[in-house]
Image (cartoon, rainbow over all chains, first blue to last red; front, side, top):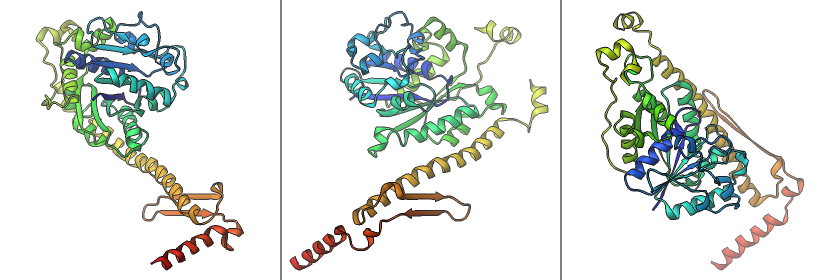
Length: 273
Length: 104
């Protein structure tokens, strides 16, 4: 039984694509067959973050419109054979996606993958609604920051009204992935805490990803952080989130401010990295 | 850092962010929820009325106003004269009702 997961947020730049790639790689490393689908037609980036930008031949729009077969468009990851990518089109616009076409592609993906991770574009327009339309589960990516929380609230409302599951009166599980969190700043009252965000959005917590330079390093080299630097705090947090997605009960370790040595404090973060 | 903390204590920004969001979202949720409710009500009211009276769907207005104390639901339906002077639809229904009574 495959699971369609939409990774969404409303606001841009909060880490949807990074999270889609990282969770996808974590799930694949755990042995599942995973495909990550980029719905950001016109502004595709998942290919770049996953290091497959030079291997794109056909894309989601080609498959939706019947110009290419699904296996022709799927790109198999070079590091993990059970991880695949379905890229978005870079030259078309979001209206090229039809509900009927996307539904057909999702059904076909369900036949060969355990997890279908739909990386949603920012906004609340067609691309975003198509990415969430057929979802069984939603991962709402949020930064502890006012505009991101507001937009997430809006997206949660859409998940409850505009998805197939919602229309059939079925349950669509929504979970919060809090990214770019800084426990130190939260403790000092400079940033909303995990509890603050959870209280406002009122959905269960999937995981907390601390602000970390390792995340940028991984995207610089085009490798999901869970593969590039599995020992890093961010990768471990994504691994834990992936295990929770799989239904495991993983205790949440409250992120603490990373302890810095004397020299690191003297020379700043870069010296520590 | 600790000296800076001492001076800024009690004036931290995160609680302000939380409160602003709580107020704003309470308002926005009521708005979007209300819009959907009016649409659902309109659809269902239309279906009920259309079962008995032939009406023009464009001539129906459903308005939901939310006030602090009382909210009002305003329904404005324009009906053709023929609808009330005994159209064929209600008459047929009456016959069916009589028939079912007779059968019992």
